[in-house]
Amino acid sequence: MPFLELSLVVRVEQQPRAEEALQDLGALSITLRDADAETPDEQAIFEPGVGELPLWPTITLNALFDEHADRRGLAAALGELLPWLEPDQLNFTEIADQDWERAWMDQFQPMAFGRRLWIYPWNIEPPADDDRVVVRLDPGLAFGSGTHPTTALCLEWLDSLDLVGKTITDYGCGSGILAIAALKLGAASAIGVDNDPQALIASRDNAERNGVADRLALFLPEDFNATVADVFIANILAGPLGDLAPRFAAAAKPGAPFAISGILVGQQDELLQRYAEWFDELRVDTREDWVRISGRRRR
Image 1 (cartoon, rainbow, N blue to C red):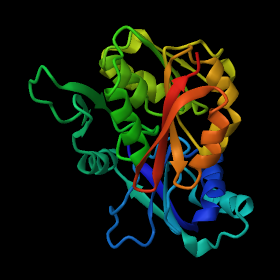
Image 2 (spheres, rainbow, N blue to C red):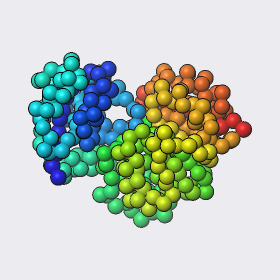
Image 3 (cartoon, helix red, strand yellow):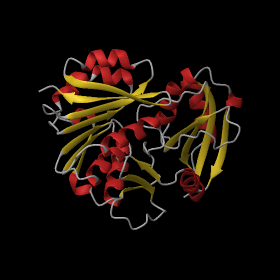
Image 4 (tube, one colour):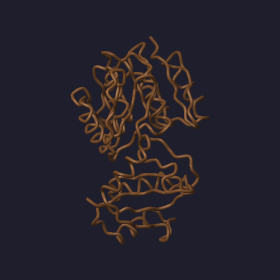
C-alpha cells in the first residue's frame, strides 16, 4: 500500500524528542539521514540500531504514516508537541510501498562479518557455499541491518565465538539480527529483548525467514526474567548500559562471554569501571566513533 511520508529537519539535540513525537502520532517507521548530505541517500540510516544516535549536527527525519493520515492534523499536533517547530520545516510526500522497499534494497547489499557470517537482504540469493553462514533480513519497520558500526562490531564478535549448543540473550534485539546470527552460527536457543513491540514483531518475522523462530523467545523488558545465558550481548545506549549492568550480570552465567555496544568513543571509561565489578578480561574495540566492550562474567 502507499504511504504518506512526513519529513522534518531538526538539530541533533532535538532529534530524540522529535522522534518520540512522531511515534506518539502513529508513525509506522522513522528513518534518519544527514540533513547536510550532498545527495538524499548519502549516509542514510535506514535501520539504526536500537538506542544508537546519529553523529550529524542536523538530521532529516522521514516518518511514514498511513496514506489516509490527516496532514493538517499531523502538522497541528506536531506544533503542540514540538513548540519550536516551524510550519515550513514540514514536508509531506506520497510514497509507494515498492519505492520504500526499493530504497532499502538498493542501499543494503550483502555484507560479511568475520570469517563466516554474512547478512543478505531477502531479495538477493546467496551463492552455494558450505562455509558461509547466511542471515536473511527483510526491510521491516524495526532496527538493525548490520550497516551501523555498533551492529557490525557485535556481529564480528559473535562470529569469533564457538556458539554451538549455547544459549544467548540479545538485549535490544531490534530486527533480531544478533540473536538470529547467533542461532545460525550454532547456538541452541536465544532470547531477544526490546522495549519496542514493533521490534519484537520484526524479530519474529526475520526469525521465521531464517528458519530459527522455534529457538527464539522474545520479550519486552518488563517481561524478561533475566534467564541466565551462556552468552550475553546488548547493543543499546551508554546510559542504559550503565544502569542495567547489575541486571545484565545476573543474566550471564559465570564465565559467559559478554559484549555491550551502542557506546560513543569517550564513554567507555565509565562503563569499564562499572562493569569491572562483575566482568573480567575487559577489552575495547572501536569502529569509526563507536565502541564495543567485551569480556567474561566473573566466575
